[in-house]
Image 1 (cartoon, helix red, strand yellow):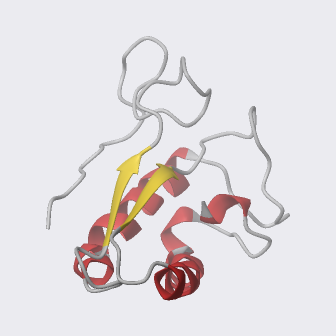
Image 2: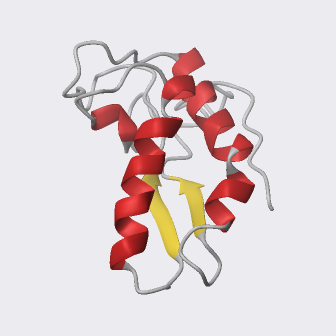
Amino acid sequence: LPFLSGSATTGSAAWPSLQSDLKWFSQQSNGKKITLTETGWPRNTAEWKSASKNAVASTSSSEGWMNVLNDHCSDMKSIAGKGGVGWFWSTWNDGDIPGYGVVDSNGKATFSFKGVTC
């Protein structure tokens, strides 16, 4: 989760950090598919704070992170051989982890979620 990185800034600027992490994981995976199961970018720091004082927890960073994942879908598919890297958003509802949900605890969208299939 790039938000927790010591070099985190915004969700939309997180591709280099993710790319570096994926390179390391793909070297360890022996060609197996990698699935990012705990991904998301918080809109607040109610649950966790980043190791970076420059990390921005906000709605725009959350949406920006989703856009990074979508925009680099084909890049991630080319990593690690058999199927590359897949991902899913870790928290649908803020009732589970406050500030991480695609919808708030009342079911209202927190941003325009547009996951892709590639």
